[in-house]
Length: 165
Ligand SMILES: [Zn+2]
Image (cartoon, rainbow, N blue to C red; front, side):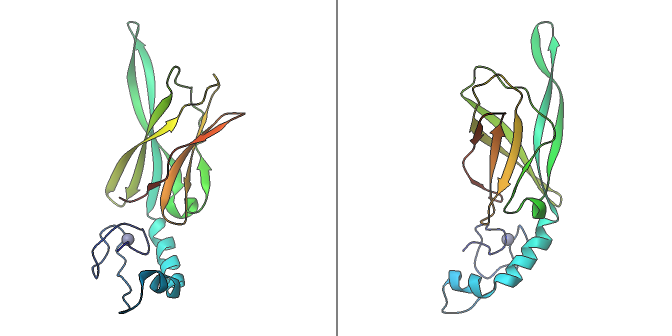
């Protein structure tokens, strides 16, 4: 079954390895019903757990080295803590240069949960216009995230992927 709190697929009857939630087990009931009945416990546990989770993006600074572009530095920029992003979207304060001639771009997202830093490579369609772009993230109620890319006229988004999994 899926953990009620973080939606990670885990074994029945054990503490969730991601968020530490103990499953609420009601024999003979279907999980959806159990989840509904315990919604307020699940919601408040999730809110506390998400305060310890940070979602960010790895951004690269490039430099010219003898006519070749090489990575100068790598920075992690935070979108915010999980509880601030849950069921919302947030945008990076920095704007990014558009990568030309690419149909699709790959962005590295970092999901930190305590000492664990999970790096996910997420693909999304590139915007066509040669403008600075903003990168955003959105979390839904089922603990999935997607990336958003926008300029002054258009927005693109990635597929939804599980925050933990
Ligand atoms: Zn969990």
